[in-house]
Length: 318
Image 1 (cartoon, helix red, strand yellow):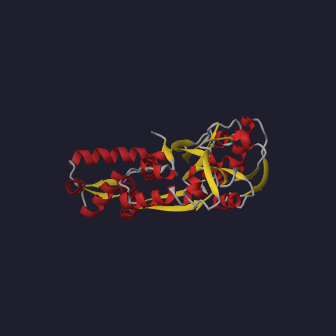
Image 2 (cartoon, one colour):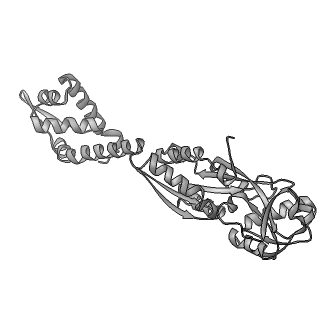
Image 3 (cartoon, one colour):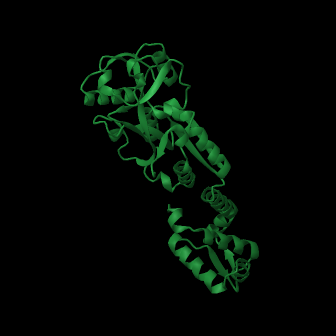
């Protein structure tokens, strides 16, 4: 005979059978468990009906365990100990005494947002363990979908018609974090360096240094709006390399504010806002339902409370 123990056998039944084995009677078992004798008897009868097996047999004025009851009693300590351990672990998770968050984020977040997040979590939730891997948004999203991570900090360009983030993040839970302004980086000796705001159209004849594929896509979109296709001569997702190339007179570039927070602007390069203005959004992605996990909910709350003003970021709720 087979049966589904999660439907037919409950923890209380195991405790009752164990108590009968230890005390020798239903009355004594009821007393040790703090229940009335009729309540214990009724619970046993319902359990026996579900199992289709007798657990106790009356012998005169006393009872003894049947073979099935003896089998259950033999496993009772293991079963109740496992229940107790599971309840303890769940209580630890709910109380954030333990928990693990597997995090991924893009390179410039690694030296800005991520360290501040980890420090805040260590201070407020020391029981949460965080593992971290650096990944560009497409790779981070794929890791999330494959179950390799729990949370991905990504960026997107909401004003771009061809921004791939709209499709890649479909079906995932999105928590907006920050918005940052895009700026142009030009040589300090450039004729336009004296301007407070640079019209992108005036850079149509310049050579451009592009960043990661998604950043390159944004550059193409901004230049298209300005009426030209940029001549891209170099590509690198290293923001420091981009700025040093510009300082060396190798071209001009477009970078997000956060990139400027991770590298020192070299002598020979200047940054300026541009028109038309463009922005980049930063968000945290998780699989649907993940926010119900206490450690992930706590991490999301800490992220929402981070202040990015010193990096030139505007909070999503600002």
